[in-house]
Image 1 (cartoon, one colour):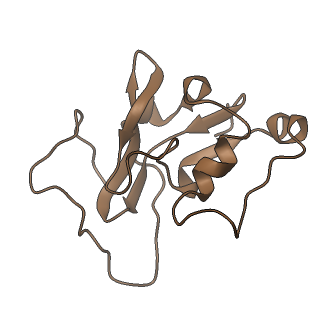
Image 2 (cartoon, helix red, strand yellow):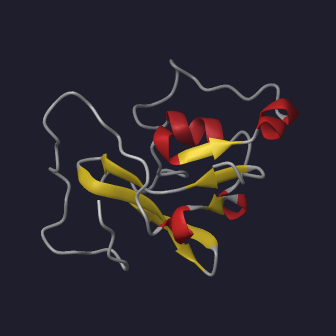
Length: 126
């Protein structure tokens, strides 16, 4: 996170009904999303899975994170579309192959969207 120049991304554990969700990275660039819910989102990522530099925030003074007015699950995409593109994202956590952040709650973990067989191209410990 500390080395974020503009907007950086990484996997998040225990989110979206899966053990983890993550940006899919090829040759150091984000090319897609490994997610259990609405993979069609422009930025199919949880709020815990990205950081934005202060310089980006200051250079986009009209960018807002909508608490109301966004479709469910689209708040992150609606915000990130205002300040960056998928091509500009900076993958962290060893090219998004390590879970260093977990989406925790004080309730039993829901893994309803976890595939029966491993579908990701990498093996990640959660």
